Image (cartoon, rainbow, N blue to C red; front, side, top):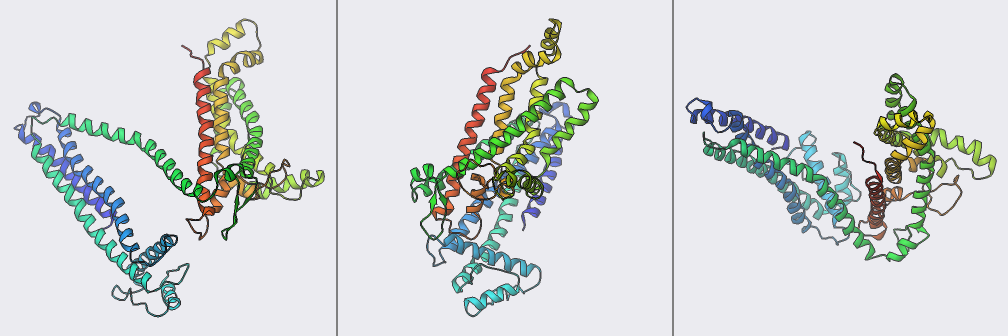
Length: 482
C-alpha cells in the first residue's frame, strides 16, 4: 500500500473518530451537554487526534528505519569494497526501482522481471531495453541483490500499511474507551496542540544541528586524509581524482570575498538611497507603486540573473571597459558577477533599510524641523544616526546572502581559482567549487569529494559570524523609543 493511500485511510479513521468521540461523549451525559467537562467538539478532537498521531509516528519511524535495515541487508550480498559499496548499492536500487516501474507500466511481466541472463554487458543491454540505464554493467551478484531488495521493499510496504492502520485503529478504540462526561478532553487536546507547537518550533533547531553534524562528520573524514594547514593556508586549488591534488582554500575565499565586496559596493549605496527616498520623500501613491516594483527583483530566480550576466553584462564590460583598457579579453569576470549580484541585493538592502527608517519616531523629525533644520539636515543628522545600527545589520545580512550565491558566479565569473586583483579576470567562489566537487560519478570517500564538506563548513562558519555580528550591532546600538 502506498503512502498516499495509507494517509487517506488514516484521515478517514480520524474523521470517523471525531464523530464517534463526539457522539459517545454526548451519550455518556444523557444527551445533556451541560454535564460534560468539555465541549463535544473537544471529545471529537481528542479521539480524532488519537487516531491520527500514533499512525503518523509509526509511519515516520518505519520510513526511516526500514530503508536502513533493507540497505544493510542487501549490502551484505554485494562482494564490493568499502569505497564502492555506496555506488553498487545505488545500482541495486536503480535496477529494483526500474523493474518496478517497468512492471507497473506493462513493459515486462511480473514473473519475467528477473529473467536477465548472459554476461554483464548483455544484462546491461537487456536492462536498457526496458528503460534502466546504469553507469556500469551489472554482474549476477548485483542482479541477485536487486531481486532481494525488491522483495524486501515489497514486504516492507505491506507490513508498513498493516502497522500504521493497526496503530490508528488501536489508538482510536482506546480513546473511545476513556471518553466519558468526566474526561478532561479539552485539557488533553490543548496539551497535544502545545506539544505540536513545540515540535514545530524545534524543527529549525534540529535541522541546523543535523546540517552542522553532517558537515562536521564528513569534514573530519576529509582532514584525516588531507592536512588541515595545507587546506586553510594553501594558495593553489587543483583537484585531481587520480592523486596529487592541491586543495588550498585561499583562492576560493579570495574570489568569494572579492565578488561579494563589489556586489556590496554596488548594492548598498543604491539600496540605501532608494530606501531614504521611499521613506522620506516619496508620496503615498508613488511609494505604493515603486516599493513593490523594487522588491520584484528579490523574486527573480538567480539563474535568470546568471543569464543576464552571461548574455548582456559580461560582453558589455568586455567590449567597453576590459578590452579598451587592456585588462582582459573574457566576458566572465569578477566585475560581471559582482555587478549582477549587486542588482540582486538591491531589494534586500532597500526593503530592510526602508523598514528601519520608518521605525524612527516621527516626533524626532518634527523636533528637528521645529528647531530650524531642513529636511536633508534632519535625515543626515537625526534619522540616519538613529537607524544606523539597523542599516549596518541589513548590510551584513546582504553580505551573507552574497557569499552564499552560486548560479550568478557560475555564469558570470567563470570557474578559475586564482589570486588576482584584476576585476576583469575570471575567478570563482567556494559555493561553485562545492557544486563542482560533488557533481558527476565520483568516489565519495576520496579527499577530492570530501573537500566539499570542508568548504561548506568553512562557509557556514563565515556566514554565521557575519550574522552574529549583525545581531550584536543591532542589539547593542539600537535605540529604544516609546
